[in-house]
Image (cartoon, chains in turn purple, brown):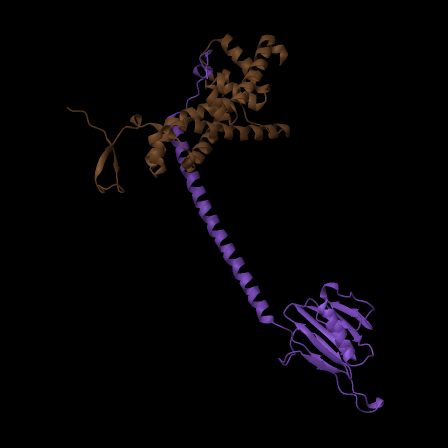
Length: 203
Length: 211
């Protein structure tokens, strides 16, 4: 680029010089700053590494804990499978009381006479069960690790932590099971909770 | 009596003739590109030579732009700290001086912004000790009065205009270098200088009354 008009720059009359002592002092300060910034970055790298390692350790522990939870079991250790209430073969006056079933997550079932609860799906995060007959009272531990889904007749209940009682409709023994299987097959069009539980309360 | 021969000696531990000692050429004989090359290989002596060669220029540039010698010292330290840490990003050692000026001007800009904020909050307390008038101490009264007027006019300009004008007329940089240092296109640099010049001419022709 042509630069035809070039006067003497003003710096020639407005000189700003720096003495040797200042030059030396500034050089030492630069050395200190550089050492600090290098040390600082190394410190941050170490801190970052420790933080990442800690986060990984926590994630591994959580993963291991989840793996250990596994499916819901009876307190005794047996699989949930089918739970049946006491047989009411005697007279009405001598009808037996409900059978108490304690589960591994702290929840409790009270399975009434002639009642039958069948587990359809049981994982660390989900329990799906169907009441095929009779009355079952659920006392679900709140904030537990898994979602509870109870199928009963035309109702599907999803439970987080509550106590409720559900009675199967009076039909032939095979009929509710057939209904439950058909719902399970059409899970994308699940029937929402219809009808209210016979008794429930939030803890 | 023969005068003592003074040599700067350096030990070449990494070279094939490890352990041998050879004379290092005087810093005056090494250009910027060579010094940058040596600094890239971790030569502390070359880093210090880069600093010593350009510290005067960076200090004067920052001092005149900021009008304050204390802040200029801060800018020098920031500039060389950044430059020596990032010297690997300098592709051509020949442009070392302009690159240093570019870093220094970016640091000056940061201080302009901070000063502007402090001024808004009425917290600005620094005293301008490096104005053009103050630096031209040995000149006559009339010239110093003109420079004082110029100082006041420059203080009214937007910082980008003032930077461009001072790089051109105070530092005597070429238009291309101004564009590089200010980090803008050549056209923008020219436009800023022209706009600043128009304001300076107007105020200078109208005199004190215009300020």
